[in-house]
Image (cartoon, rainbow, N blue to C red; front, side, top):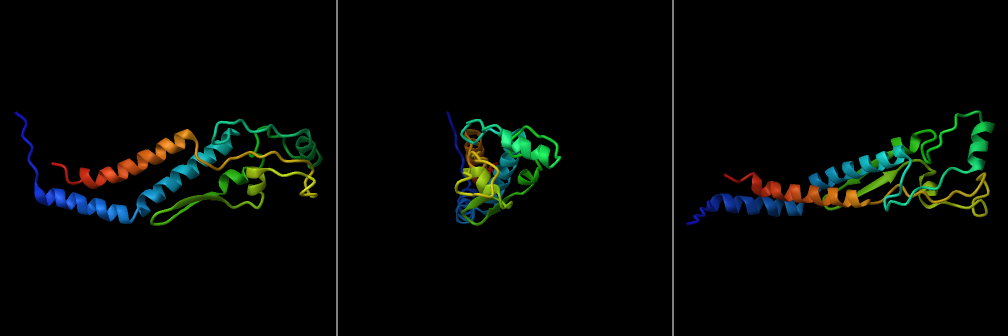
Length: 159
């Protein structure tokens, strides 16, 4: 025989906590922002790939020539020359939203690419190297974070 005992006070408290959490996702949004920020920084530090798994284009000979001309060391991994991009990825979040941003002025050019024809100040065309976005692993981590957050409303009242 199976016997189930419910404590009405605990069940009501659990549902009230769930309702409160569903109105204010700030804590989980903050956690997701940190998770995605870390994932993006790791992606940049590793030299790719894009969130969809596509390898980033290698640096061009024009880029290497510019490094030599400026007497800078040659770093072969895309988006890691100075390390600034990886250091300037920041999350922001609110009650029901989260976003990740990059503060360097060149971040959009690295994400979307650009041509010398459209941007004459460039020393050559820059291929898009998407570093922002959700990888399949990021998606799984976000879902796990939300599930963990919501489960906490009930686990707290479990006997």
